[in-house]
Image 1 (tube, rainbow, N blue to C red):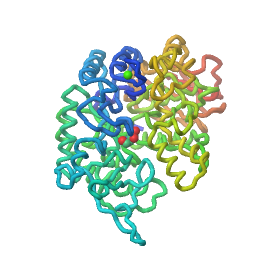
Image 2 (cartoon, helix red, strand yellow):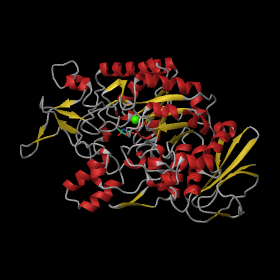
Image 3 (tube, rainbow, N blue to C red):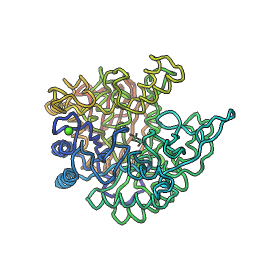
Image 4 (tube, helix red, strand yellow):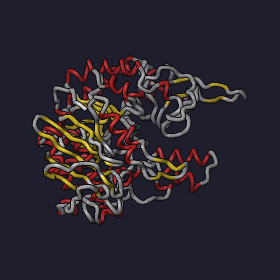
Length: 547
Ligand code: NOJ
Ligand code: CA
């Protein structure tokens, strides 16, 4: 696979790190992570070697979806600090050569946003900022929502507003009304918000569900067994592409801003359009949709070949890839693709190798660099994630037995990714002196930053070394990649630039595997220290060689 790009803007050689502010570091001991907490860890991040931060939302929000329900795009949620703290964070990061991108939640606002509060009144100029429709009558004459679209968080995507009797669209929670992108004023508002943050010195945006913004029609969705009901009316529409082009031309281009679009259910064709004068890059999700669900109760072991195929599909597409195995919506990757117990370090390093040696821009999610795992199950009454709570409620309303509904909804529980960062073996993992908003995983006793720093063979030190190596090795930054025929469940490729060639061999499986590869060259990295067999790879074994 040739990388045809000839220029290398900063974001192509950068390693990004995603912070979920609520769970990163609590500076004032109220149990909630905050911006001063992030500032206090900038040296840690610099030492890790990352170049840019993606901050999940820090705007004022009633926290139905923890910041993805924005009540004011220009103010900071007081739980996280003040605008002065935010400005200080941007300045302190810049001193360390770390750029910041903000989360731009443009598809919807909170129902507590002023626009929606005013817009409930059909006479208000803000009414048309949202999508309102009259209900329909069903065959019995009973009033039902305008169409059958489903919300990503379960149930109907429409809620009737008591004050005006109309239904408004919300593809997510009912406290997250969708904005109306047929209204040019909405587009102008979003451009202004972007300029506001770019003027403050941020380098760009991660654009939340940006391929959903423009709804092309409002008829019933066809029963869609593969994706959410109704999505054919709004996924990656021509109207959406047109709006992004306009925003690119008028805002992003003049500021030289970087964007990564969170493009739900995106295919290669649409992705290619998005990265042409619309967004810099996109996140695709094929590779994190490879789990096997043993219907309908629990997730079973994933198949390495499927993960490999999904990664290769995007590598072969010719577009610049983003690389990630975790974010605030996904299970922890060692728990999902590795073995969080028997091969914790081995599989954590295996995933680090994939992330940092494939072509593309890597995104590390907080805690991934120490191999944080999914936490033990908790009673449903204690869940915080609206997606999991709603899913369980809906299943129960269909008569699904309690224990089955619990296990089913547990699979989508995003609390798993959001337990606080494990800094030390002190109380609450050193995250806070008080009990945090979500309990710290008890394995913070041994999986934590400070223990990892002191252990030369930790996952953390592997990340550090591999990031540093990547940053000084052009073959890994922009060299061509060639797949090497390797055998089942093994992913192997070379990276090549000018006179340098490297071989990467990755056993993605938890079993010993025979490989057909000729391990010629000098061994630079491995997650096993000795006895490197010429034919066999141990569980999750990786090797990077210089040819
Ligand atoms: C995607 C975000 O990553 C997720 O956390 C959020 O709930 C939805 N978009 C809605 O904003
Ligand atoms: Ca705090």
